[in-house]
Image 1: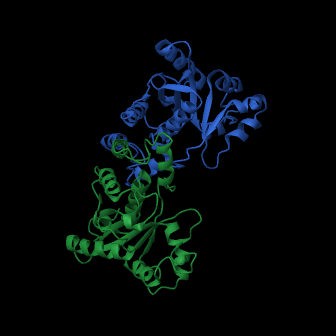
Image 2 (image 1 turned 180 degrees about the horizontal axis):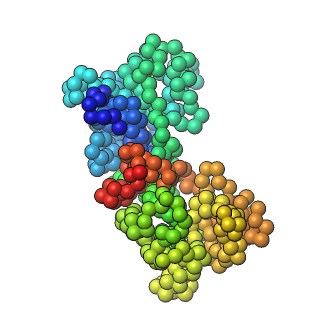
Amino acid sequence: MADSKTIRKKAVIVAPGSYNPPTYGHLRMLEDAKASLETDGYEVHMGIMTPVSDGYGKKSLISASHRLAMTVIATENSDWIRADKWECSIPEWTTTLCVLKYHENEAKKCFGNDVEVFLLVGGDVVETFDKFYADGTPIWKQEDVAEIVSTGLIVQPRPGSNPEKTISEMKLNNGLTNVHIIKNAIASNAISSTKLRQAIKENRSIKYLTPDSVIQYIEEANLYK
Amino acid sequence: MRRVALIAVGSFNPPTIAHLRMLEVARDYLETVNTQVIEGIMSPVADSYDSKPSLIKACHRIQMVRAATKTSDWIRADDWECTRPTWSRTIDVLTHHKKAVQEKHGDDCGLMLVCGGDLVDSFPRILPDGSNLWDIDHIRKIITEFGLIVLTREKSNPLSTVSAIESISKYSDKITILQDEVCPTDVSSTRLRAAVSSGKSIKYATADGVIEYIKENNLYRN
């Protein structure tokens, strides 16, 4: 803990995802990111979970209205994390950079111009920064990656990923200055939404993997059957 | 259809979602093999279990297990073991609960022990005074007369541990080994205590009721 005289830098964490459905893994990732930034002298004012738009076009993706509702419910009893509907209310897919810039702008209105906004991703996502689709087009626009990395990026390490190395090798202007890697996570393994959907389909229990209120919503709306 | 109750024993210092998932996964599995699970019991060890200074008082641990199981419609906390003045052997805890379960639900009802791979890894452990932590005969009884379900964790290999103990290796095929495919979580009580003592959040790693209890009683602070 920094002493009270220290002026802590202000931070907001933006966590994009399918949230199909949201799990304790997503929520833990935000909690671990906050703890890690606090260790580095930040005060984290807000965490934002922003479900991807239906326009992203993944087959298994259920309607954004459900995914948003579940994310709202999942964050109901958090005093710092909230769900945001901006991204998923746009029918077309929005680039990650665009989502980050929107929230940076909003955060500045709320918390002042000195607030820093961090994009929260898993190490597996960082590994796609310099990769290509099968047809040869890059997965990410390199200028987008450069802008994200210089805005702020916080990464949850995953087995087999080496985010610092991948980003360094891209030789971006600001290097790793605004890149944070989560240390001392309580749970290093993310709960897989894919496996969760499979469990629902097979009538296996998903209790303790996501809040009870989310489980109730899934049951009532008869989702993932 | 077979009917069984499940019991998980441990420190629960504090209980985590991993403890609760063990029981959920065991129940899901049993239902696929034509077995009805009538209840789940979490039984914290008594204070005299060992002298580890990190083990907080049983009165707190039982309250946390109660808080953790509050929203479950089949798992409950039981204080029989932790209110006894001395440490109980697992076999005695099982014997007590099997009798209680049969009195409540009928003589055809079984009781199975659900544990993590780390418990199995303790089977061959020798205590500092040279005696065995486990009586091999008790392990055999647990496997054959009760039933043992083991949830594997990373770095534990329960099957090879059991196979290496000569007198019980022949029962190794009677042990059910499961893995939580949905949530290969490595949440541990040790990590939770470290987080609490350094002022970090443990939200979503255990039930909210447990977090509230820890805060109100100022536990795991040093």
